[in-house]
Each structure stands twice: as structure tokens, then as C-alpha cells.
Image 1: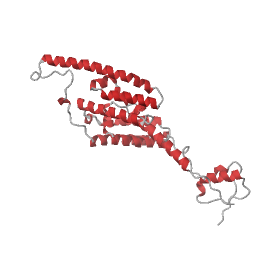
Image 2: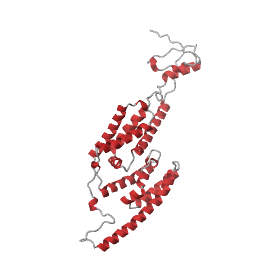
Image 3: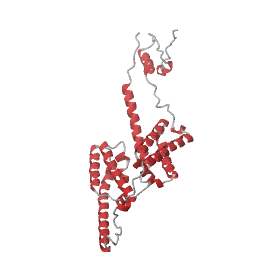
Length: 304
């Protein structure tokens, strides 16, 4: 059965959509060239849902609760499957610790403590001398020279024998954990160098302090999960982006037990993690849209 297709009023050619299914209109000479072009382009193009997807405000309280549950499950499962290493703190020498009388006399112990204190002061001074220019680099836009200067500082930090007390006093690990060094805007070399330093320091910290995350309660797991969900909800205006970011956060938690322990210990921020993941999600979406736009076929004209 032939369909009676009539030309739309002038200026409304682009309102055609794929609601016609497989039907192809038979255009005649009553259409202008531009009208034919607009009509067929509208029929051929993929629907753009970028302005149709729901707002994150459409996510119900129940939906947000489900997101919190997913994040909490990821934390708990990762910790359960990756227990911390055995406590070694009792086997390690700590500067200033009183030596046993049957091993060392009091005079040697005091001298060792004094030497350790002097070394600690110098260590903190060296770290702060590297931290100051690193914070200045943080204010600059990403560039090759900035990356090179940061990598040079990271190499100098790697040569230092960082201690737990130095980490607490200088907050150098917090600086290297920032998105400007570990986020999507940083170069791959910078991300890897900063990540390696933080990972080594984190391992050293846990070993020397004998930290056990199994002491954390269910309430602590939930508080960390709620913190990440609230940060995600506030930063993503679109529902699809919110859901995607929550899924990516869960993947990051499940593949990195060290990160989970850091979040539970409070030495890393859930908001910073969300920022790093959110930047990657946005970058992937932009790349996907760009590739889709470049791959779109040109409009085809029907023979007259």
C-alpha cells in the first residue's frame, strides 16, 4: 500500500525523525534542494539524547541509597578479600625507642636517639624544600616543562628515606595524591611516578604502624560510602553521568585494596577520588561523542 507523504511546511523539515521506521519518503520536484537536504538528514541522523536524558535530581532517595550500598559493598568485599600484611612493627627499629638494657647500655641508646632526632629534622627540612616548588607548579597549567619539573622533584623525593613521622609532619603524601598529579590532566609519567611514591609510603606506613583496617566498624564503611555518593551527586548534573561515576568508583575500589584502606583510615579523601574518576568519565564521554560524530555517514539523496 503506497503511503501519501506530503512535504512539511517550510522551516519544519528538520522535525522529521526516525519515528517513520524503515519508511523512505518519495520526494518530488515541489521540494527545494535545501528542504530535501534537511528532511533526509533528519531521517538519517542518529537521535541526540544529550538534552533528553534525565537530571540527577530525578534520582530518588531509594536510588541514592542503592548507590551507597554498592559503594559500601565494594569497600567491604575488597577489604575482606585482601587482608593487611602481618604486623611487623614490633620487629622494626623506631628512632628514640629505649633499647633493652641487656642489648645496649643507656648511653648508646641516648646517643642513637639524638642522632635519629637530628636526622629527622634534616629530613623534614629536605622534604619541605621540595614541597614548596611542587605547590608552585600546581598553580601552573599543564605543560611539558611543568611535567618535567614535577618528575625531577619526584626523583629527589624517591632518594630520601621518608619516615612515618615525616609523612605526618609534612603532608607530602597528601600533596602527591592531588588530582593535578594523579588525575586525568596529568601526563602518564607524572601519574605513574606520583602513584608509585604514594604506594611505597603507604606500605611503609602500614608496616611500621601495624595498622589493621579490620578494626573499622560497619558505620565507618557506610560513612565513607556516603561521603563518596554525596560528592558524586553534587558534581554530576546528569543522571547517566552520576550512574556511570558510581560504577567506576566501585571498580576503582575493587581493584585497589590500598586505596580502600587509605579511605577508611582517613588519609585519603573520597571527594578527591571522585574528582579523579569523574575527570576520566567526562573524558571518555567526550571522546565517544567525538568519535561518533566523525564516524557519522553523510546524508544520502534518493534518485529523482
